[in-house]
Length: 172
Ligand SMILES: Cc1cc2nc3c(=O)[nH]c(=O)nc-3n(C[C@H](O)[C@H](O)[C@H](O)COP(=O)(O)O)c2cc1C
Image (cartoon, rainbow, N blue to C red):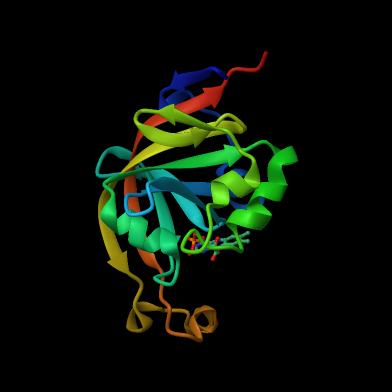
């Protein structure tokens, strides 16, 4: 099995803009009803310090199956895959875990990290615990041009999550 090395958030040197915006995140949650994990591509998110804790903030539309699963689970994982696995995002960013077992379809190999599903093909894994959730609101937008992102009124729910573990794949 692939080895992952646990790091302190302060020890990590990565470009969050590149990792989130270009490599993308695989937000992985557990579906208790279906008895399987589900993974969703996300390219909007942030990482930093809040309430003196290392945090990762995710933005999930209510239409996603992942939304229901994040609501039902206290913890989740975020995986950053090596570039060569971009095909997995074609599946996880377009199909829904409501309809199919997306992880099986990607061919990714699930591994257990801190009792959460992560992937052998990840170069980085964050384990997260939800701290705070709130829906983005039309009235709170200062730059109203951004409302173009919400033509169907499907405002993201913002999840501020504590980064409880940060793991890097050990290269052989
Ligand atoms: C590159 C990319 C980035 C995405 N980023 C987000 C995001 O940050 N938040 C979100 O709610 N959906 C995002 N999506 C859409 C979901 O990944 C997509 O709707 C997915 O099929 C939802 O899967 P689920 O129903 O299994 O949760 C993104 C899709 C792609 C392709």
